[in-house]
Image (cartoon, helix red, strand yellow):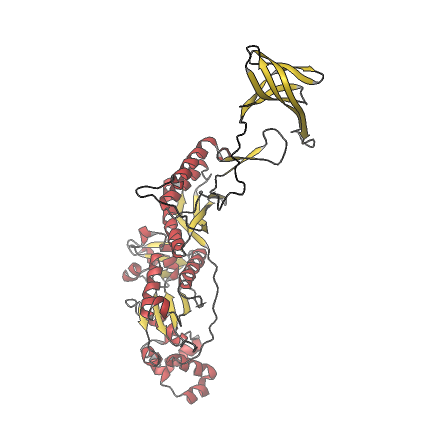
Length: 504
């Protein structure tokens, strides 16, 4: 089987600092926004959006010059946000090809994609390019894409495409003609090389490609040969793919401290939209969401919400996070928000002809969250017995949906039911030969007919929760002839008898 011909797609997202900050701020997208970098008061514009460029703002302007433009919005640069957006872009690109090489610079995202052999999955290169750019627009990033059989030709063309053109496909053998009109700035030239070409009057890649190779090598060495091959689209490339990890994380640094919960939930809602969109692209659902808040004064506040089943229902997550943050509010103003999600398998529910056969798990999750907000975090769930003989020893666990068949098959044989008294009630017991003979309970006298026991247990001698008990299961008869099957417990530390449970 012959190896498919080389084919590369280059993705180029310019003005990444501005796009990274504005993707989670939809209210600012229609305003002239710039990103300031540097140490105040020497900050300069390092990135800007289209509206700011149309207002006359340019790179390198100072804060004073930006403030002179009416309606302009200045944002502080966030390298953490840019790194997170780069990871998201690599994740989107990885859905179209596993072979991705990143070549980003300070203010732009650039990556090459090996798309050889993907025709059967995504169609011709034009269709793949449209699908990839559509995926990027869904996560709030605009970019341009060029396709060529030469890696460096695709890189140069993607960087040199006009802003009104987002896709360009070069047929094999036409690389030199496609690169002719591109400026030399598309190449990573040193200051010395740029000055040399400027003195020679070389402004475009076409003029560089026309220079004689031998004379160029004589004046600039092997680096001149490499630049000439780049301009002609002939330089070979050793592809170096990266393998980014799939992590569902969104973060944003707020422009001003937030103290109102509704304002915080609005920001979280925008971030949840992106998390759910990325989870659906991988055909998974959100199993848990952790909200990490950076507070004013250097503090931090983190809460984790985990419903019974993974879900991509935004309204469910907003309601659960609202109830949780309302019950556990942060103690200071919020400066930054981060959402970390764990992914799980999407739930499958058997539906009836006209309605669902089972109650919706989302409604149960919301109900449990409301109960936790009322009675406390550790007071809602299912009781699980501890591995000890201590009385009332149990812990509370969250409700979970079991997977697969149960490990223990319930028996169909009838069993006696036990009704626990909480709290236990005091009883007066008369002993005969160290065994209960009769007792008084609830103003009634009972004669013991059968007594089983004693079962003694003790523990925790090393701390203040020392306990020791003696348990008897008795069958007693009242004066009116009624029978009572019960459990009597004697506290050996205080010599106190109590009625703990009834058997039905």
